[in-house]
Length: 371
Image 1 (cartoon, rainbow, N blue to C red):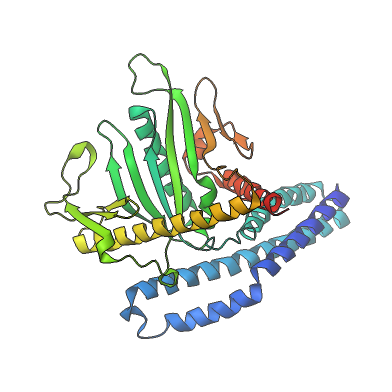
Image 2: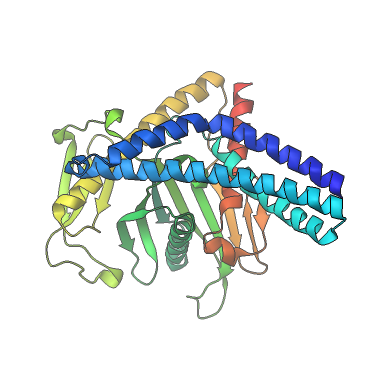
């Protein structure tokens, strides 16, 4: 057993060194120093948006450095403990090392996935849009379940979120919702969640207790930066204002603060109603519209590349996951074949294994396409 554990520790050591090299730890330390200097500047908060970006980036860099250092320390400690267990023939210590090796493998594998996020926009924050599909009230309820799932996932990781728009359905659930996950690499991580999600269950809204299949769609966009040059001429936008509404159509505000923004050439429509002022809602809606136009441009560029490769199959995200609550319990990704028999934990935000499998699957698909 000791020899096997030693082999596993050596494998983990090699993987961690490779991850540290790809993430460029020296560059992270240098960036941390620069960001700490920027944070201490007395005029930082003169530009609140930049200040928030600097603080967010510093928090991320510090977290990455701490994460790597802690994994290295745990790995070294496990090696020392295994040496003591061998010299004293202590089986309890060997068992403790075995448990720590399993935990380390999970943590290092999670970190290794980050090194696979090398797309043009992967390092961006994410805009997530969820909309109900076929299935009536069950689909609207499913859309709300998915929104909670992603918000709980972000909460588990300590990622800030901001809800821009929620359009409630008449009876229950959501017609659509848009929110931001404000963490580096949120887009690269969550982009594998894009596609159609399918729920099978006994409908809580059917008084005859029949089984219902419903659908909800998830779109994930990268947050636009000023350097993206997504300029929208005023004559290409139509802006309407209206009064915000909540569940059942009840009024939330007594002023016309909600904003609906339409990009006339493409027909893209976005709404924002969760801020208190019309000015704030207009700014948030413009960010979402810019993100949608950026994604449209990215898709057009990708379509050209697909045509050049004669690939013809770039719709992998359309059918992606099934959540079955009856007659059995299972959540299964239709692309990666990853599955679990515990849907309740998935709906509570424990989706890292699905995301990791999706990122690795996507990397494999990219490698095949380039071959």
